[in-house]
Length: 314
Image (tube, rainbow, N blue to C red; front, side):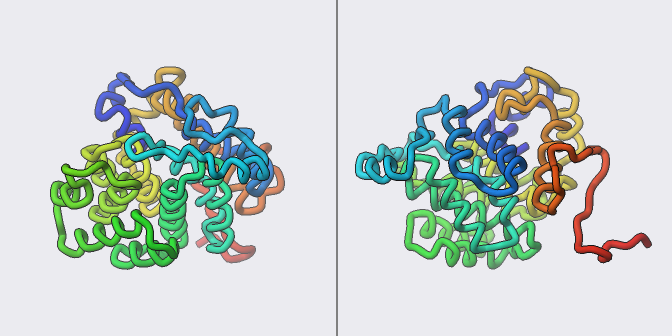
């Protein structure tokens, strides 16, 4: 939902999508989710194959063997500031969902997915930061005051993103408005700093932590609005759940199906119902369903997952 707002603004609600054709990262997110469902684990070769199929953008590293990637490392064409494809970070969201309960596996699998993209430490840092935030929300351990310090500890390195996150923490403690955050994080006299959409997304989410719609609408006012909205929406969605999405947004999305749907233009998915079925199958695979492909899903129902005999009728 965040990416839709970032791409189209208010126009999508009246069926006037201005989105570009499905991006490499959007297609890879969907294909990566399908791969996790099919195999029950992260298969890097499968992910790279999906990346090749989705790579209508040059930012995806063609599926190379590990040996070739190592050989070409010195020739890496890491994106320079201003032309980096931050959408690559979004493609790792299903990995964060699938491995959220195990911090070691989460880091390992996020790093493997980041290797699919060009050797870019900025994208890798962003992927780890967003993955950690989503995992913390799903484990109900996300605290507004401690998320950034914990994320910095998780990154375990002095990087440009760490410095930006420290600035975000200071801004939040001061109760700084969005305008001040933009001035502090994006000095006009210098080039845009690396990973600024990630830092801005953290600010937009944590400054309005209980309100998904406000987080997304504030992110819409930032540079690189599409990816900033997508990241802020992903973290806020994990924290507030689908209940945090305004009913009017969901109704407008439900009424748009087929090729005209913003989901189709961004992710190659035709409807919200199809997206919910994909999410339910991922949940079923994570929770241990033997064959999620044949799992019958009623999108009008909300499933609860728990250990045997722990969920009982009232």
